[in-house]
Image (cartoon, rainbow, N blue to C red; front, side, top):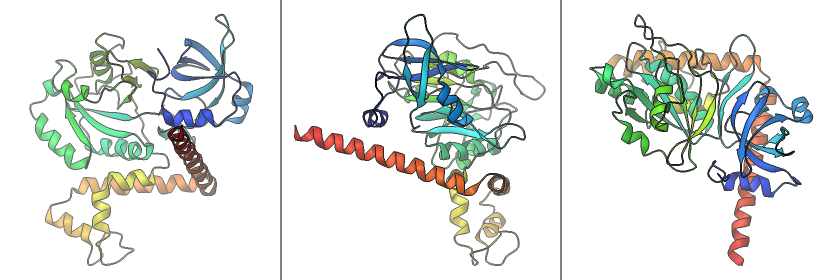
Length: 360
């Protein structure tokens, strides 16, 4: 399959044409095992390793992740290819690394649509979905909420309505991966070259959804515990699959811990309704606790705003404040400005190329 089928587009072409890359070729990372990456492109598929320069220069978050487009050198059928660098990402879904380490972990790169999967069983949790939504809005990918296990829930439509109140402006799909109910709506998202990623905690049915979309069993599935609807990890690695219609689907291991990373703008977008209310408060520095003229307290009193949603917003903002104290704010701002410059340069190159072609 060509790189176009793997999701190559004008965004990445602009970077490629603007660089002197010699005999290197582009490839997309479709799987990873320890320090080796499975890469696909016009050449087919092969295993690759990072060059010495990439290992020494890149932070862990800058290493190739599944979904990345990379610059690579091929060394024959019997030799491992070498990844020289990672092309700038169009989008990336990240989290803070689990544990005490303060660093970014890339879950998925260059994703167009993120399917945020939640179970309709005992594991139904709108607060957790709000957390995923905040990071997803920050990532640059379009979120779609998938409520799975409709066949095991008599109140599926009521829970969907509850989730729609949480996910303002985000599509909510109710499905059953076991029976196929609701999959027609999901299949409308499956366009050739379009990359989707399945995200959610263990036991929500991501692997079952992947198997149904792939029309074959490629991912192991296990039943959840009946006592609390918790699941065990069945998917242990991230992998990019080609769906029958040409869309690309990335399955990921269940995330037991999902701490946000540098997602201030994402939190604002996920809680845009509360931010809009806050702008109506009498005082600009209102803490929404006991101040007179507080629009948020008025909405809580009137019953038009969910107290759990307000508290979850406070919690996520506190996490962001703590994270900002732990990392170097100036360094993070410089990194953001650098990415803005890179993206601006790519757009200018693409626009110039379009103008040049129009003159011919």
